Length: 427
Image 1 (spheres, rainbow, N blue to C red):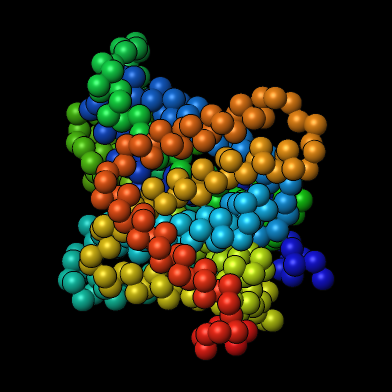
Image 2 (image 1 turned 60 degrees about the vertical axis):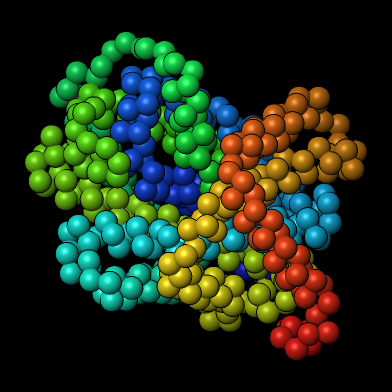
């Protein structure tokens, strides 16, 4: 059996589109309007368009690479094919480190949102129990099947987006949507342009589970391009609505809740707070679906022990990869000192982006493809954009990245020599 066909292909275009949408729309959309408006005024919606244009070459690269492969792993598969197993492993390891930190942090954020409505969750013990239960719940959903996971993800996506859609429509129809455009000072512009880039990170989530998607070489590129455009437009409309309703109502994560309060009172605040909790939960569930498919793909490629490619005979899911991911996330949720690793998590994802951007021209040249010259230009633009964003990281982030790389190198050595070590699945 073809390794790509070991798991059933049950997900079509709309299910695939849920992965990048929930990667790009998490908790950030509830804070982004106030942050951007405070920095650049009524130019804020156009900042989101600019961020989408900056990340567009990367999205195009991932779309082009998706047309060449139909197995699990996404950027791991691409770096492996272009540069060998070590690069493929590091690409996956960097993305995994980023994802584990994110799921642990997001679980805390989701419970924090719910604590506003259920004060009992302010108790440290109950909050810890709720966080563990949340991660365990997400893990169980992922374990019982891809189709069930996508259904739950779709329901959560509707719950989190519906209040924002209503807020946007009511706001733009009942309030004066501030007309006009004031160009910001360059220093103000520069302070938030990176933030708009970060808002679109995780667009590549559709690439990881390619082995369970129907016609992935067509579905993934279409999902990537359409969702990037749709999410950019959605961000712009939400910010326009915020400008119209309550540009001075408040800041931080409560910005949209304050705007909803201007329209619907306390009920609006409650609804937006629930939407925020569901948004973070959907983002976490999304990561729990796609990241274990990456470790499954790494095991198929021989860069992780074969046990990670085990498939549940009952549920037809990569059960070991899913349970391992959930278990590690629960352990991280106990560790109060993972802030330093969180600082490097975004930087580690940029390594994955850079390897993928460089992989496309390498694979096209190696395979003798008659591709137009602008393929190389776009790939180089993607690499330059990634390096530019990485150049703004702190020295502390680079130090932590070096530590992540060193740990990954040790793990790769263990996986590459399985018969030497007692904990290997092939020992």
